[in-house]
Image (cartoon, rainbow, N blue to C red; front, side, top):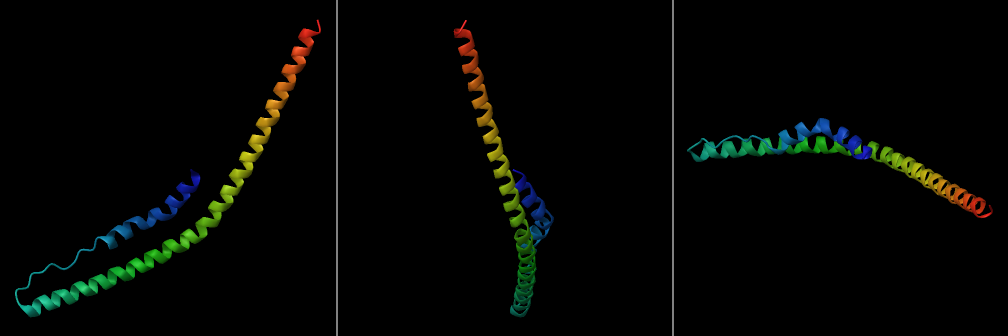
Amino acid sequence: MSAWLSVTKAVLPYVSDIISVAVPVFTRRKGNTEESQIQILQQQVSELQVASLQNVGDIKALAEQLKTALPLLEQETQRVDAKLRRTNLLCGLALGVGVLALVIALVALLSK
């Protein structure tokens, strides 16, 4: 659970940038002549190019953050797995001691 939290914290600062780039406000078509429509199309193409360059930069930044976050997540996973193995071992030992105590109590009860 904490692994997803750290990934979310890494991605969260870039969400507004991603949304602002993903929903670009393009130039509206207001021209009646063919020349004005061509100029508007050229401006829209340049806006798309700027948006795509911003996307590339944001994607690279996210990739770098994920590159640093994944090894940390793997280390955390290994630590949690080791802790789980220790916990399972202690539970097994506690169960064994409980069964042994029950057997000793039963033997003591039957020997009277």
